[in-house]
Image (cartoon, rainbow, N blue to C red; front, top):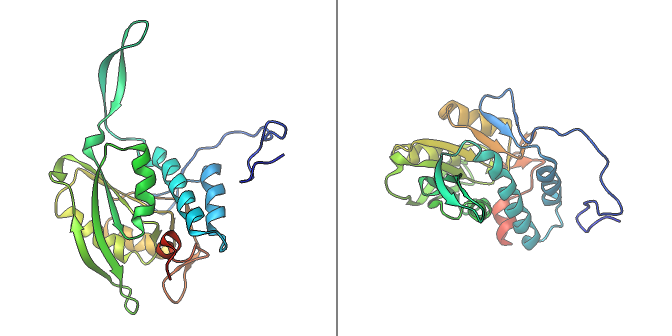
Length: 236
């Protein structure tokens, strides 16, 4: 039988299929769509309108952990000498303290928590932005980053890359501090958001679970998941 989330169990195994890459680079420049089946399965659950706030948060946390494997594939590492129970050897360690996750408030916290579960030694920054409901322009109300960004790699997180205004504004501010590198991670994006980012910051790679159709009249991604912040925190 199947488990509650639809996964196979011992008496109903999955059929054997060829393995596929967990992400694909699209024709849209530095856009990377992470299309691993686990990510897509959980995203489908998140899209459903009757998912509770608790369920939405948990699924976003899980997807963020899964996406981190691709996002951090080229993270700097170093070798150390260690002792196993049997002999001396060398191992690989991540330079976690050189990594900074920057969350675009408020919804970015949903991705931040999942990535910190995988990389708890990372530093954390926050940028408070809200989208003006009439102009869709990003308005900053909070800004706090770790020091010495020139020696650090920054991963900016926000569930939605919709109009792109908030992401562009956040990266504009981060670049003032000269980080070693910048990546942007979102749950969903659309052609309009990708175009805005690539026009303003063409060198910044974008990692996402899906490239949706576009924006509606209110600037929401469609088919999307609705307002990610409201669904994470159970607000309206």
